[in-house]
Image (cartoon, rainbow, N blue to C red):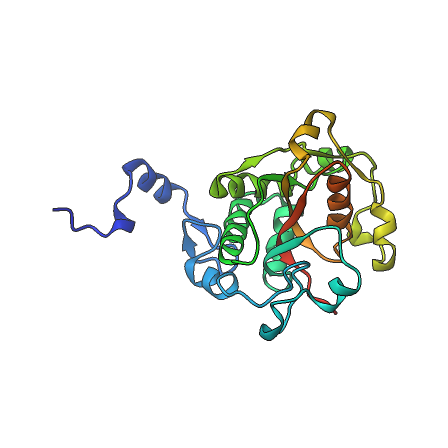
Length: 247
């Protein structure tokens, strides 16, 4: 009978790789196999705060049955939003490490956190197909990868649904939203997206999950959701790792 604990019963090659190439938690630097150690994950990603089902802004627990006041006053083009965490210290630094530091092992960590948040929220239906927010050609060449796509790959596998990397295309090279005043972000991103002609049949009548790393004003996701619906999507759910709390 094997009395070895399940966590220790691992392939010899994996054990050797761990010994030769140890990894450290991206937050506390403790030795671990994943991007975050178990204590950091439990402290910063395991909790679920009440959120508006449409825009994922924080709500009081008693208000979960309705969208927030902002969504009631001005309904966004997307139907729902799931966020794994707030865009706040220390998780905001992880987002910056992925996006601007190229720390790609963080992308599967974000994808797993999103999967947990989505499957634990019984109010929101699972999408049929995932679409990463596309980067412009110049920014993609500069960065070398699309962080939204790298997050969407593991998320699609965990959910068991399709991922179409080029379902949507960015046809206008816009200034980075972070460099634009909040009041000008909708104008900055207007008409920036389209649906690839080869993907039209995939969009019509479908529930599309749009994946991104951070949702701040929501202008980018709103523009992409409006574009997908203009081309026939029946429903759009935003799936973001971090949501910037309202100020």
